[in-house]
Image 1 (tube, rainbow, N blue to C red):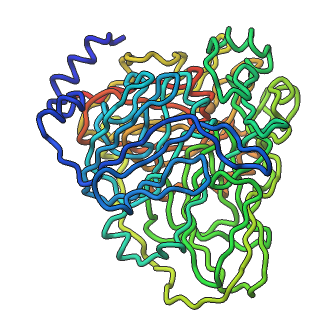
Image 2: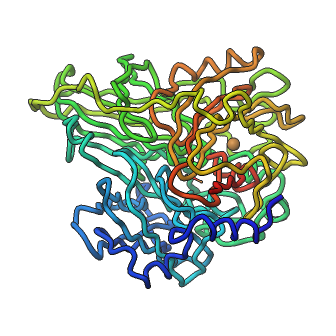
Image 3: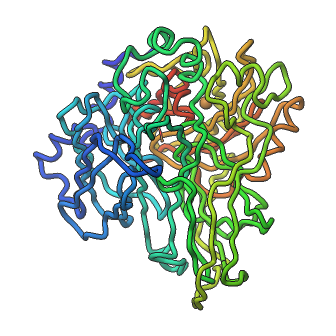
Length: 536
Ligand code: C2O
Ligand code: CU
């Protein structure tokens, strides 16, 4: 095991300027930002259901420097503002913590130095600030931001802390995709409410807008009993679907093409999205931006943290048409003893299973409201993606394998839970190398069975090389796999029970300590998270 001191030494040796705290860098004047935005995490209220406003946690944003268009609020929503920047811009994002507990921000999908990435070891105490500064090195795409304090990510995100981070670049502009009101972000989340319109989460946190109470397993047991303990570990599922913070969303569109940017910002909900009239979906982008060329799917599978971009042309519908985007039924996210089970024993034990993963429900209504001609056509070629060559990987013949494990009622990776500042020998990689990583979701977890897990690597975008699945669980996997879009850049790979995936990961620019974890937020919060260390 590496100790904290080893890690710090490595960072100091290799990181140089980049390993310095932002405050020191700031003092040195290393970065004069093009854009500066203050994001205040605070408690507030939002009108969500009819009647009383809902107590929420939210980011209030303010542009301090740069174009006013660098930030766009979603009126009336608890969701954070949409940040819009261009590749090559230098940004300063000041987090002000107006909450009663520590928080931080992770820039999900962005390639940033390790001390700017929102690692759980870097948080701002209540009343304090944390200054993030980095250059936008990523290609155009739909990224997002959310808190990442260990053990509290699920709670803080659930009560409302999350926002979109859109990057544009010249390549994207050349594709001439729909802009402005025709470029629609759709943030999907599931939530539950009590009779007074308050968000329901774990019972020790419900209604109070998530106060702190003895976290962890014991806290759960004493607070809300067995149900809470199971939910805290297995994942929270709400019984209502919100789009951009609103229930029963209706989108009013014109008869022309749209760019729909879907983000699954749920804690643990998996979507299998399709149009109810059976028309196929034209996918143009994934986590790390545009695909090389559009691809068609009859449905798309979207796990927590994943993004998908659609080109949707409403011109073939008559004005007055209504269509619905639904989440289709699938085998669920749990397997026991080799077979799948929807909402059986495990489901009951988990409480909150009115709408289990795998249940069908409507997500969004679209009303074709007006006729409009638009001189935009779907480009045949969207972007250039340089493919990694597997044989260039330093461990091509012996991929690193990360097994998702369950020990004594605790999640882990290769049998180890999260350790704030540590890495194991097999989690150390070299800067400027390409590797094959294999995530394996096929370890038996005894009575816990198996669950689906979207695995996320911080600080980079990777390419999915290949997948495989245990024979006994193939059918269940096949109930969602036609909706995988593995063609483009990804920062997450979704694995059904029994599934394995090899990904090609390159470590460039930034040495340091970065997390990799499951993006079912409750899984990450209860141990399904580790660090990897990039050494020079
Ligand atoms: Cu969006 Cu560490 O995650
Ligand atoms: Cu998981």
